[in-house]
Image (cartoon, helix red, strand yellow):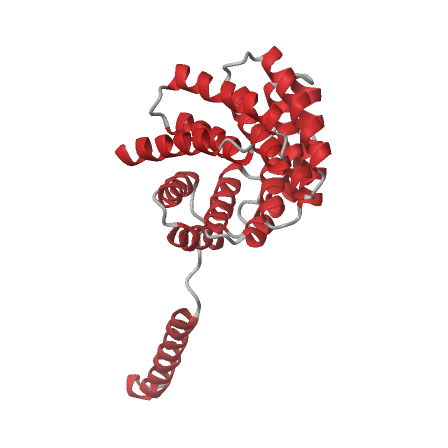
Amino acid sequence: MRSGLALLPALHFNLSLRAVALASCAALVALAPARAYAPDARQIETTNREIEALNRSGKPADAERKARALIAEIGSARDSADPLARATRTALALALFQQGRFDDAARELETILSALEAKLGKDHPETLPAADNLAGALNRAGKPDRAEALYRRVQSGYAKQYGADSEAALTLQGKVAVALADQGKKEAARASYADAYARLRKALGEDAPATLKLAQNYGMLLTDMGDHKTAGPVLQDLYERRKRKLGADNADTLSALALLGADEILAGNAAAGLEKMDKAAAQRAAE
């Protein structure tokens, strides 16, 4: 039988092995990257609101940084069709758009659209607004042909869902006109505007915000085309309706007055046109 003293070397050896093992484990833990946990819904909502606030306050670069960080944190926990992740990426696209980085914004919006199409289908009510957003970015990025195709698809989808003479469908017809004009297809744009304008006035009324917004774009195109005979009455009607509805000092009313003045100058009535433009500028400065 071995004495207690004889057991000491073995005991010391076993304790040493245990110490080495524990030290090795500690080293591995220290070297291993911290495990990342995707933020929960409440955290994402809170950060999205912060990103939106940065965009609204004219800090798109800060909004971009915060959005990219959140997207990295979300990782693969939520796909781009997920409402919260979609809101983050949309806010990122807006931040890029505000910085004039239209191609970058379009890439983010295309990611959203592709995910929604795969998950919900091309004509789903949540997919169509995403296609509308992408079309707007593409048009600003100098790709009006692609924008036109998307706008037409959205218009068709809204016509099926809400009716051909709905505000949604006719507003999209106006956007088709914008893309056509940007391709130099001004006669086609004019026809699209004229048709949508007439149908909006009938469906929603002459004072409806959607009607007046389209009237402004229509009048601007007519002025650009040199058709002052048609542009003048459209812009005069727009100004009078906004003045009556919104007030003479409202920013939209003053924009209509300035557009009317510009059209009159180009039509050869410089004195009357300059008077209107000066009046609009003075009222804006007084605000």
